[in-house]
Length: 60
Image (cartoon, rainbow, N blue to C red):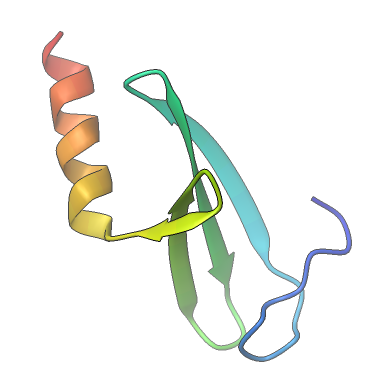
């Protein structure tokens, strides 16, 4: 998403959107300050929850 900035250091960051169990999850990654944030529906989620959903998705 062009123009998206890291809230931590104000550098440009990358957004990757994936669908997990029918719900979109977004990973925001900043290579300047090494920040990684996962969100669902605009709310932060733990990486462990995202990984668990990926594991379930692969098994079905």
